[in-house]
Image (cartoon, rainbow, N blue to C red; front, side, top):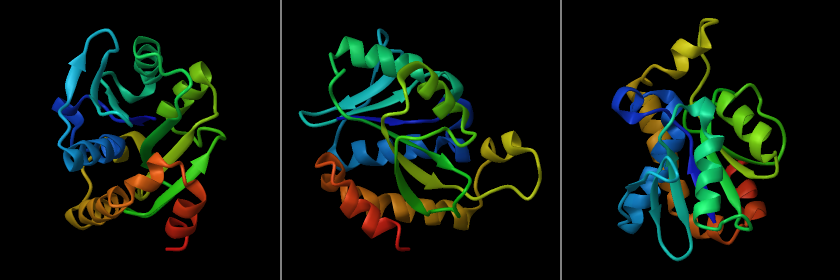
Amino acid sequence: MLIVGLGNPPDQYGSTRHNAGYWFVDLWAHSEGLQWRYEKKCDAWIAKNSSVFLIKPSCFINLSSGPIRKTQRYFNLENRTLVVAHDEMSFLPGVIRFKENGGAGGHNGLKDIISHIGENFMRIRIGIGSPNHPNVSDYVLSNPAVHEKNSINESLANLIAQKEKILEENWPFLMNNWHQS
């Protein structure tokens, strides 16, 4: 399984809402004691074991398809399941939903992936809330309030506790469990 966390380069944007996908794969890697290493041929940070490849593209979020395709080719992962974890403004901070296939919903990272790889992949949508103003870019590139980040962290920790269900691709269980809250 290939699980991609979407985000922007962490030096400048690591704590911003747009990096919720990075937060998810970082927590997963930490939970298994996996180490991140930069793979130049993939243009991504990769942590892996026998059942999962976690990747963080090292580019800006709207160019994520390149590192995903390079990682798939380099590690011969074409037939493995692709899961993309990303920030979602449609949900309150900490709300997690799953979506199989479909459109980008205005998310530039997903738009890039769909235009170059296709729409047939599972999404883990991590709620970050929506702005009180029309400038979406400023909102996603800003840090969440402490209570928002705490809600997101708690939900991500609870999801990581069920990571075996993700590896089993038990999407009906996850959807029933997470879409009820």
